[in-house]
Structures are given as C-alpha cells and as structure tokens.
Picture (cartoon, rainbow, N blue to C red):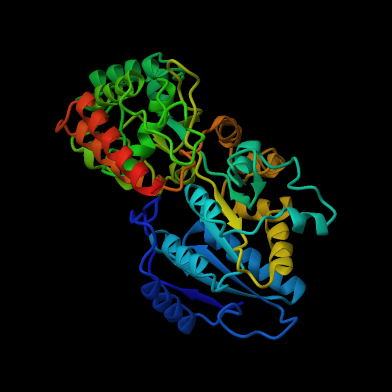
Length: 457
C-alpha cells in the first residue's frame, strides 16, 4: 500500500469556507493535472484491464488512520493494492471537489464529512450504490447501521438513493463534572434551564477556587467565528424551536428563517450562558474549550467523543474519573445533538466501481468497524456500540448511542459551508457584545438569503 501525505493535520472541523460556484475550468484542470503528476494513482495512470489497484482519499487523523489500517489488512487479505492520499481536513474537501468535478477518476473511494455530502450528491458526483448492492445479492445497507447515520448517505436526505456508507459515528455529547454536581446536589441536566442553574451555582461557589486550585467557571463554549460558534449553538437553537429554513426547507433553495423569535431567544440564552464562561470565550475554538475542561477550570460544555479518552488519562487530565457524558439537554423541544459522521463514497468517475464497492463493504463490516472503534472512532453500527469488549473499554458508549440515535444533521443544503461561515460570524459577534441577538439574527438572515439567491441563478 502506498501512502502520500499532504501537509499537517488541521484542528478545524470544517473545510475552507470558499463556496463560490466552481473555479475557472482551466485553473481547475491545471490543479488536477498537478495532482495527477504527484499521485501515482490508477485513476491518473492508464492502468491495464484487471489491474488490482484502488485509490483512496482519507482525512489526516484518527478517522483516516483507522481506514488506512483497514486498507493494509485488505491488501494483505486480497492482494489488491490500495494507494492512499492523505490530506488535512481543510484540504481534503478541496482536493475531492476538484477531482470529482473534473471527473478525472483519481480516487476510487473518498472519505467525506457528512456536511459535504449534499454538495457532491446534488451535483451527481457520486456513484449510486443500489446497482452494486444488487450485484452482491443485497437490497441495500443492512439494518445494523444506525438509522441517523444511514440517513446522511441518502439523497434526498433520508428518503433518496444511497450514495455512501457511514464509517465514523460522531455525535455531540454534553460533558459535565459529576463531582461538582454531587457537591452542590445538582441533577444531571435534562434541560438548558438546568444547565444555566448549575452554571450559576458552580460559578458562584467556585469563583475563588479551592485551596491550591484556581477558579472553576460554570460553563465553557466555543463561539469563535464560523464553524465553532455554529457547532455549539445548533443544539440550543434546535431545542428552542429554531430552524435554519422555513416551511419550504425541502426545496433546493429554501428561504432562511433564523430571525424568527425562537432563534433569537436561543441566541439570547447562549449569551446569558456566556456570563458564566471564561473571559474571551467568543474567540474560543475546540482546543480552548477542551483545555479548560482538562485543567478542571470549567464544569460543563458541549464536545465531541474524540475528547473522551483524554479525560480518563491522568497524564492529560486533572479531572480523570470526574467527568460524565450525557445526551443533549432540551428546552421547548427534545434535546438533539449535532451529528458529524464520516462517510465513504465512490466517485461517479471511478473506473473500478465493483472493486471499490467490495472494499467499501469490507471496511464498514462489523468486525472492521470494531477495529476502528478500538482505535478511537465511534461506530455507526448498533452491534459495535453494544459489543461487550468495547463497552468495558468505553463506558460512555450507551450515552454516545443515545445521542447518535437522537441527533440531527446540519441543514442538507449544497451551500452549507458558506452559510455556516456567515451564520457563525454573527453568532460570535453577538456573544462578544458587538451586536444584540436581534440585530445578529436579522443580519445573518439577510446574508443567508443572499447566498441562497446567488446559488439559485
């Protein structure tokens, strides 16, 4: 197996926020030609008939590491050579977009973050898996996959054809300090009002810190412009009844609705919660939030499962054994986390679709997904979540499974990357005190409407 690495890993959860239509065709072709000159893939080379090679684009990090190991195992088992191109998160979207749009066939399989899927699927850049399932004598993905994860792989969302399979089952969790909740006789937060009450209580009593310790803030959150602010806001936004788009949300170009009362109330609540967060939280990304939690200087937050293992490691955490993980609190509606699955798809221009599908089925099978889970990736199969060995190693799995089952996707629009960036700017500006909640949401709504209109032409 050949691996070609491109740059260092980025901490960002979203791709670079450039969502103009597509770059000038000639510039794109030049970029693709450069890519092909660097990567020795069968799609860029003229491989002979029956050549046993596959090319795979993966994300740098634990998600991609597990898939790289699966590729090694598959290569040893079958003799099929798997060439891997590894990119940091911010670059992976761009590389895949260039290749899929130009239909070079550089990749036989790609990892993609689920918010990218509507863009690729709506542009008909992915292979419909139904004919490939039929060749295998199957009607589609088996029932062991979590429904919320499989829904992300369909276009239209939840009801359409299947164009990918889910590989990593990320879904947000609510993190809280169980020792402080016990100390102040607080119950596990079921609602955001419970969270606010707990934040006030802990902040008031822990403001001066314990002897030899420092202050403990009641809450910590991300509110830096862009993805960070949106990721922490969406569970609050949804629980207050907020929706990104109005009643026409199923249309390809729906009208935004983030300036409605429910949405404004949600942002007002976020700002109120920010009173019990560390100074400067309006510029926090994931690393700052996790640092406060690991150092024991904050009591609660929304976070992703990838951080769970660090809290159990005394070398990394001052709160080892003191952190609990729960599903998202609710408000006017049931609490629902933001889902963030990694998917694997076959580009439409793939020249080795049958061989690629064989690897796809193998890599997402329960035994291979268990290996991925042992490496730190949340699964997308129920049988893996309930595996006794994994439950012993990962006691948070029951909460993770409940969160994943109840989770919601980011709006399934091809323009999400651009919309998220704009929305996050105004959420951050409101949290920094630069704008009122009303002004922030009114201005965000107007800017999102411009994005929708521009892409509807």
